[in-house]
Image (cartoon, rainbow, N blue to C red; front, side):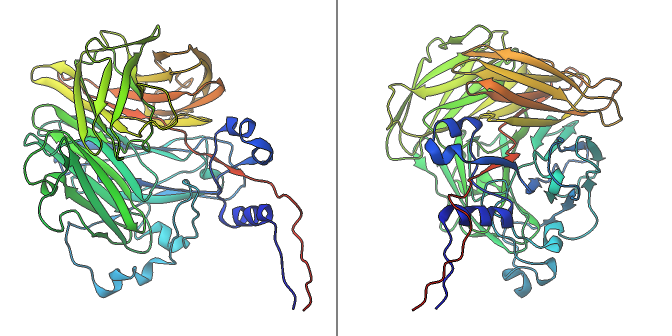
Length: 533
């Protein structure tokens, strides 16, 4: 009998060569993880998938998109494009063909590419149906599109080859009147199987929808769980359970249908029991405007919420402890000159399985900052939490809303598309030791030349500034943030656009763009051993 024997390292390399993915790791992990980690090589990802939610159903909404991939990917051939997704109302029955995946949409897609889980989707299935809504022409140059259609669809798409590493799409909607008026912006997200949305609401003055979008060629089945200050909320048998999201489709779900009565502050958990989806919450308030609430980073004992504007008139922090233990947290604001404790809110007790909310009012006091949450007592067994903040600007009937969820750090690079010549602010936070950062503006959507600057963020501070602008351009552009050295770095970007006295704004957190993956090198050469019986 002949038998082929592969070393574990060789198997990892072989799988990475086939799928173009591997486990993600931070640049500094190699120095901390022993000999095996030192052997890992960081290589550009070969495939990325993004999901953009349906922007708005308002007749007075205008939505602008900007897609961008930084230069640096390998290979000469590739593409990046977004295609419309079909709108399916909650509870719409599927046809027999849809139950198992639409037969004319191509091969089955397996989970993950940017999350390190692999993707083998067929080309036809990736594209969905119809013509592309937005397509990149070359890495390093942004491409824009816009629409005023109240029936504008959700979008899904895949980038591969040199277009994949750091592929970013910004969706920004200006709504002139009605619930949610103001500026609503979001970075299109990678599909996954689990999401947390602290800061959601089912209050009477809020209308929160979670948009579930399936980029793949087989149906996804999703569960929605809502938690309030008394624990898990219930609204009848089966509410929020086993929601089917057909292939290449989007399903909006009104959160108030998931609670028996209005609840001002809730945490939503989205879990895909099969398949994967992109998920984002759109919050619309009758008096306070609205914005997109992106998913928060995974539960952790330590969290950073970067980029609270200097003129914030109100900051409401929502924290949820998903485990079985209560969490006691220290609350600090990293400002221009260091960490301070908000008066009267130096600590926070969060009961297990319950939402705790605190009104921090105008804690920035004219100085942009970032919230830093950490265990009250240091220790390896500190409970995990998730968190987000609702931020208001303005006064009276001229108030506008944005959301800042806790976000993951920038290990190597982050990208923010859709910046304009005025009204863009970048916030960088170094909650532990200082960091050296390079910020680069891409060419503009109408041409021009890139421009870079290097900044230093001091330990325990937030540095808020106008990012560099491309030379010789008046169009929109993308900004990349590269951590060159130092400790953990967190980032966000704020867009502002005053509308008849309304301080309209939106904030996007900037986690690492996962442009590279760590591929461990083989412990030995691939070999074939003959074992005769």
